[in-house]
Length: 362
Image (cartoon, rainbow, N blue to C red; front, top):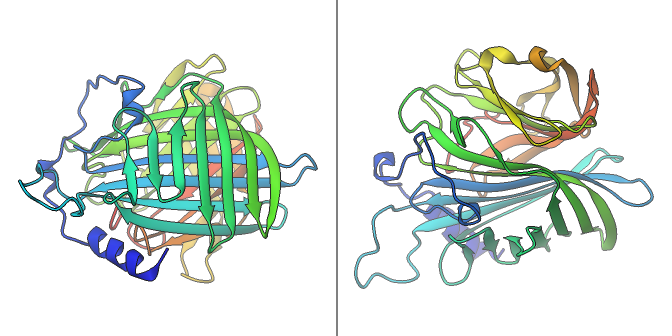
């Protein structure tokens, strides 16, 4: 990204937003209609499309990847008559990260663009969102295509993701509660298991890869309740055909807020909503960032007794701290994990709020 464009985009993100009450709010029951609901929801203030996965070369070298595109609304009111087409009413930001599991290293790229003048955009009809040459798009076949090329980091990702299970609606029919007040919720849907194949490039060498991935789409306007310090989120694909999503919202004491929740997906795609008393996430070790001094959980014991699950979740790359202060204003930990215990598997772990506020600009 050219420096002038980046600074202009950051200035737009830092602009004072309109009051949250002027934006649409997520309330139950929520009538979701697809494929249009895979697209953008500009009447809501915040939205993101998020893909993580684990890949391998034919020779066995393993990688984790993340591609996330965030949308932030700046003004919910209709455009004024005669206003400039270049005036940004939305901003998109992107995070691209690739972990080399064998080398225990992580590469990261970020960018931010205003939704104007062809710099970035998101369709309201289906999944089709882009920032320059970064793109997520759902093909007529249902395959999700990912393309991201970042010259500064040398990373290139070109993947096709085929859903292996039906779309999952989290919470109450897709309404995921995040706080006690009306509107402290998001619409949250996922493809929890996708077959991934394509190409990954860095250091000037292209690699054919395949593996499995997880797709999240979430949107709302005032998701987090007051006093929340951050969250611990994990999405696991178990070898027995189940998937497990859990998020623990941490309050000022570090404890789990009552709205912490999860979803257990059976091999046939049926789901069970989990509430805060039905699971636990217990840190077993800690890792301290040499850059920020933030202290993150390094291993987790995850228990869901009603499902017979007593798991240890271990990071594949200890240092997966991502410094995204130039785009979304956050520093967080996000990386691939291995699962052992009463079931085995793999997935991704996200830890926010350990190096400052969980959400600043976004």
